[in-house]
Length: 332
Image (cartoon, rainbow, N blue to C red; front, top):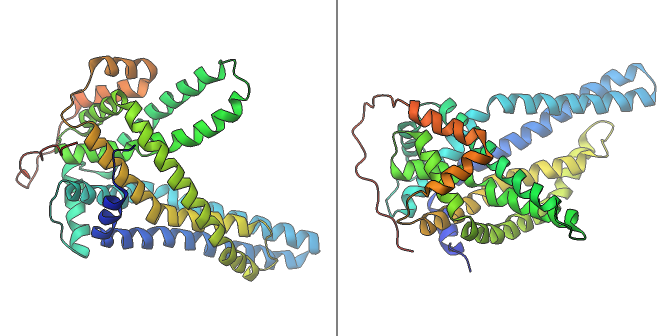
């Protein structure tokens, strides 16, 4: 039915426990930052509201909470390159090597090793971030094309169906940027732009099988995320109760934040491990199809931008010797 093993993915998560703990610290730290700064903002607003009537106090408390939430979001927006480079890319680097049967160090040594691997492929966080954004642009264009075609079909209830399709596509293509990164690390490419182009084409020419795998993961990810959200409602409500002038909508917002943290720290790496297994198995021994390269160029200018940058890329000289030949493709 699908091209990955859930048991293997759970095993990979256990083997990368240092990174799972690292992800938990980072993402739960982010969730706590949202709660603390939002609560502080609401508290300040509540204090300012003491200079007016009850209506003014309620309004100032709400706006104080919104300001705190927005401030936290702004700081995290500035840190997005670092989070992508260190947390996501580092974990993927370790997963790739474990899938290929290599031994990894334990503890902090695993995180340090992963950072070295990522730095060897992507000299700076800005390079990886630029590739990630362009890849997302290519995927958005493909998704928009699929949705645009469906909107013209004379099928009753098509818009309702497309709501489910959009949810499915977010998972189906939402992890492709991680697959692109994994392909660059696995092939030890010294040109990350060319590697991104190759991986996009390989994904496109195997879209049917990859979508089947994504369908299974869609059910798992959304199902687990909803259960986590329900579990988090109680502690979120308790946090809201502690905020001066209790913010009625805060329980839902904080529950969503806590659920997002669990998803990013635990559910997402499981889905990534599944997708990497599927991609490596499905594309084993294949070469990019020029027809698919041309199709992607037709639907996305950002894919052309990736192609152009791949031709202009000049790798920085490395102070470390090559890691050796690329690993053999695993058997399907």
